[in-house]
Structures are given as structure tokens and as C-alpha cells.
Image 1 (tube, rainbow, N blue to C red):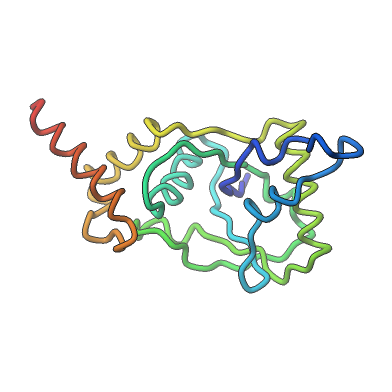
Image 2 (image 1 turned 135 degrees about the vertical axis):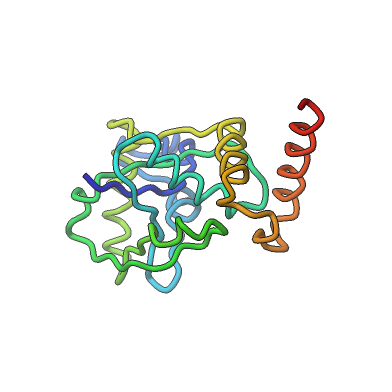
Length: 177
């Protein structure tokens, strides 16, 4: 079965304290976690195996400016059959992961509201959210570096802090050996 992975901030999806009922969604959750561009919403695809979810997480982590703990929602693609998707190359310096990217396309406010309700329910009631701690992300990134999948020179200029973290870890590993 195919799954879709998207980075979210789990805390933003809690029922707002100022909400009238349990189905309320804070505007900051939508603004922060479901930000669209060109009426599209970005996802990484995988199967349900933990290693494959890790690949989607690696694609996300390798495009960050620095590594920090984050949450992802893992959604069965079949649950979103009413939406249109388009394969696009993902923004990651790991070339073998770029083709695992999909955009949900032709989004309207109504469709985005449906996605927001689905995400809120999935996080609040179905536990489809997974947390990846900084240490786990470092392990994924360093394995990709050791395996030659992630090259430091492929990181963008804005990823200076990530580059420094990787170089420090490499130096620490060499001094131990």
C-alpha cells in the first residue's frame, strides 16, 4: 500500500483552547503545516515499511537548514482518492529520492479545508503522526553520507548549519577510529 508523508507540527493540531467544539482547527495549524504554493501541497510517497518512511524523512531532513526534531504524518494514499496528484521532482539533495515526490494539485480553499480536517483527525484520533528526534535524523543523514547518497557539496548555501553539523560528526567519527 502506498502512503504519503508530510512534515507537520503536532502541537499546532491540538484542539484550540478558544475553540467552541472538538472539531475546531487552529488557523496556525493550517498556515504552518499546510502551506500551499501554486495551489499545490507537497508530499513524499513511500510504503508502510519503517525503512521506507525513513527514506521520506531523509528527503525532508536533507533539505533542512539544520537538523531538529520534527513530526510527520503518514497517510494511506487511498484515503485521499478524491484529490488529484502529480508526480514532481522533490527538493532534496539526494538524487535517488527526488522521484518519490508528489504534489496534491488543483487545491481550493474547500479542498484544503477537507485536508485540514483529515490531518486533524489523523493526528488527534488515529495516531498517524510520528516524531523523529534530532538524534534519529542525524543517524539517517550520516548513513546517507557514508553510503554516498548525500554529498556535502550538494547542500545549498542556505544549508550552512547542516553542512557544519555533518562535517563535525564526520570529524568526531574519524577521531574515534
